[in-house]
Image (cartoon, rainbow, N blue to C red; front, side):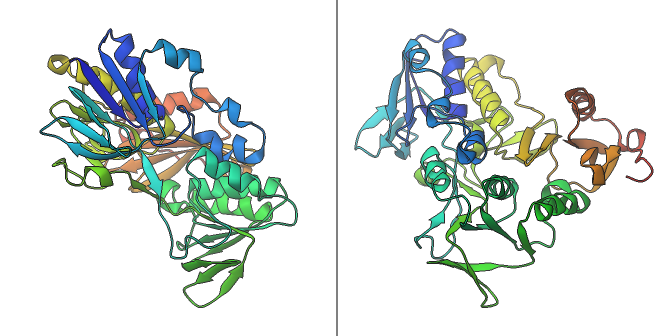
Length: 394
C-alpha cells in the first residue's frame, strides 16, 4: 500500500494513524476531520470542560509537534461526503477527491435531535465548541432542562448542579439508566441526583423544544433558560449510503473490523462482531475507540495475519463524588447481583448475567483491584452459578 486514508480525526482515527507508523508503514497517510480542531479527547467535555476545571488547551490528544512527527497529511475542517469503493477514492466537502489503497472509517456519531432543535437556548453536547457554549450559559440563577437521563445527561446534570444551576431532568423510562445498569442501581443513582436538588421526572416524553423551554407530550410546558438534548446518537454513515458498504446501526464489520477488502471501521461508527460475547455490538466508549483504531490498522497492514477484535468493553462516569466503572457488555443483561458492598452506601460491585455466564461488572466507589478481578471473570466467561453470591442486606 502506498496511501492509507483515515476518515475521522478523533481518538479512533489518531490511534489508527499512530499504529500504522509504529508498525513500520512508511507510505502516505491522510487523516481527515470535519472539525477545525486537532484530535482531542471527548470524555472531559461533560466533566472538566463543562465545569470550567479545564481550559480548551488541555484537550488535544497529542501536541502539535507529535502530530508533525507522524508525517501525515492532516485535513481539518473538511468532511468526507462520498466513498467510491470501486474507484478507491473519498470525496471531500471542498470538492477534492483523495485516492487510497487502504481505508479506515472512524467518523463517529452525531447527536439525535428533537423537533424544534433550532429554538433559542437549545444545545447538544458532542464537540468542544458545544461544551464551551453550554459552559457559558450555566451558573446560579440559571435554569437547565436536560432531556434524556443516560450517562451524558446525568453527567451534565451533576456538573450543572455543582455550578448552582437549577436542573430538571426528563426521562421517558420509569427508571433512569435501567437498560444500562439495571433498575435497582438506576433507582440508587436517581436518588443521588434528587438528593443534590435535581428535579427528576420519569415517564415523561418531550414532544418539542421551544424558545424558553420544552413541550411535553401531555401538553405541559416546562420553562428553561437552556435545554440540553441528550437522547442518544446516530452513526455518521450518511456519506456511505451509496458506497455499497453494509450499513445497519453503523458500519457493519466482521470480527476483524473489516467492512470490505482494504476497508476497516473503528470507534463509535463501527458495528462489528465481537467473538468474545458472540454478538454484534457498536460501542460508544473512549477506550474502545482507541483499541479498535489500533486493531483496524494492524489488520489492514497484515491481511494474512489478522486477529479478531474481541475486547472487554470498559467505560466510566463521574457524577458528583461518585465514580462508576464498568467492564463487559451490560446491554441486554438478564440478571444483576450485588456481590460486594451495599447499594445505599454508594460503594458496591454488581455483576451481570446473560445466559449462564458473567458478561459484565459495575463498580461504584470500588478500588481498581476489585474491578480487575471481575474483569478477568468476564474475560474467562466465568459461570454465573459459581460467582453470583449476593451478600445479605445488599
